[in-house]
Image (cartoon, rainbow, N blue to C red; front, side, top):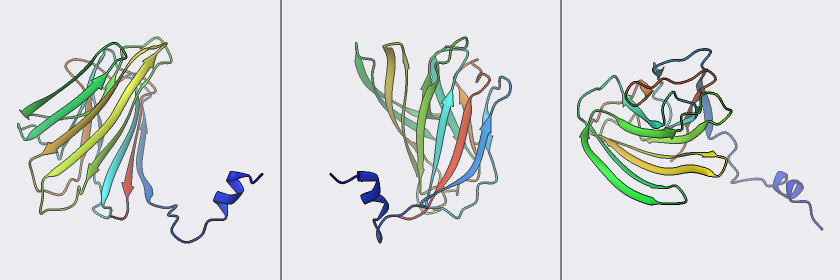
Length: 183
């Protein structure tokens, strides 16, 4: 019986092992209203943010690019909770959707998100995003798929992420920014 790890480790040729490069990582030592990645180099094809967060309120996590607070964003979502499902959109809003977290400040329950920003440095097109996010709270939880559009052709040099309304990211929230090489 072959051992799959050994077979996989002997693969040569088309296996790409360095497609993702860490650009920056932040772990909060105290509560914060936002996390910003700035001075993002234009040397990658796409960007990815991996978020593990707690918030003071159950709520969406939003993003803004290059400090743009105008109504240049569009959001789409589809979610399921195990008990219900829904879909919808928001047009001409002042931020895009990145994730969703539950208010569990006294527990070890974190919401997670994997957010992709496509063609972020391309100055010939608007920027599109997608995100898969959710949390589990002992059998109750939520899973959300977001997509979005930033109606601007500028290269993205900074990304700010923040909880909706008056929420705060809690201590130990972690956000990591990666650059993605290739097509």
